[in-house]
Image (cartoon, rainbow, N blue to C red; front, side):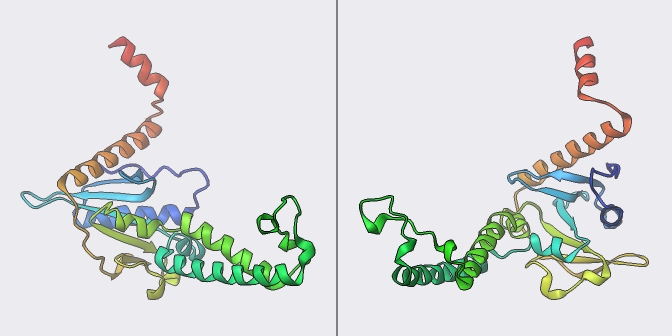
Length: 241
């Protein structure tokens, strides 16, 4: 069950090539069911490549492959929420201290919309204080990072698969940039080379079956695209049968 690698809108040739290499490597390791762009169960994320392996009486194994062609793309999904939240608390304390002093030194910043001064808002941005502006920018960046940049951490925490791999070009590989528990497959002239082994994440047989079902759904979606089978055609055929 090897889904076609039809390019998605906006995808670069380099990213598509990494996905193809991941599918090829997975099948060489015995993962006979593979698909690209798979919506994962129990979370809002989509895997670049998902793979499933079953060998006789052995327990099934599931794997997720995330392909990254740029360092900024890699770091965007690789935020450690505990570290970021601790930094967020530190920066918030810094902001509170600054605002306390700015209220004293700039009493005219008070909005005056309330009868009680302690409930008035203050326009701290009006004075162009560079330190305060820098703190506000960092707060915004941290909040955005925590809420939208923890994909790798969430996938392992949810145990979305048993094994997780990053697929990278050789020039992007840095041990310090790899998420905890993820393996690394690095592009080489002969395909992919495993530079780091992943940590095993156990989950239930039911979770693995749901994972396989998502692979099947993604594979069918790509097959329909290749065969030009639309939802309307399916509805017509359903009415006929």
